[in-house]
Length: 152
Image 1 (cartoon, one colour):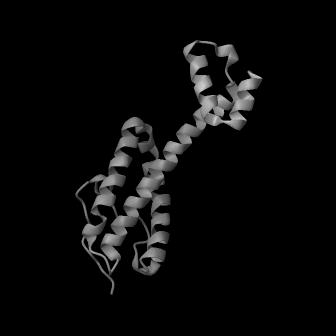
Image 2 (tube, helix red, strand yellow):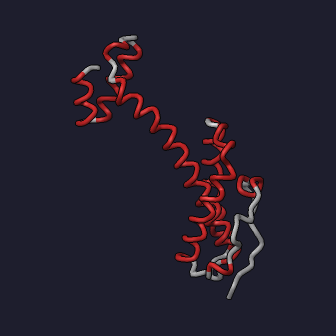
Image 3 (tube, one colour):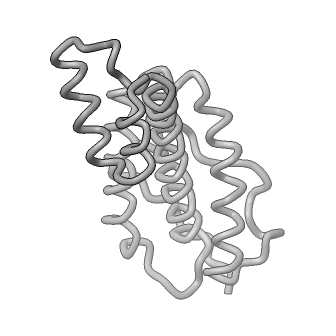
C-alpha cells in the first residue's frame, strides 16, 4: 500500500481519487491504496441504492399528496414526479440488478413517504393505505397521477 496515498485519502479525497485513477491507467497496481479503494468502490453501490430509494420515496410521497392532500392541485406535483421518475429509470438502466429488490425498496420507501405526508400535508395516517397502493407501472409512468381522494 502507498502510505502517501493513504494519507491523501484522509486529507483530500478528490486528489486521492485522481491519484488512484492515474495509477490504474498506468497499471501501477502495486502502488494503489487497495483498502481505501475497496471501501470507495463498495460505497458507490450503496450510494446508488440510497439514491434509488430516495427517488422512489419522493415519487410515492408526491403521489400520496396528489391523492390525499386537500390544499394542493395534483398538477402541482407533476414536474417533481417527472424528475424523480426519470432519475429512477436512469439508475435502473445503469444498474438493472436493483430490480431484484424492488419490492423491498417499495416497502421501505412507502413507510417513509407516509411519514412525510402525515407531517407535511397533515393527513392522518389512518386515512392513508397501510401498504403501497401503486403498481410498478404507475410509479414509473411519467403521466400517471392518481385520482384525488381529498380529505377535507
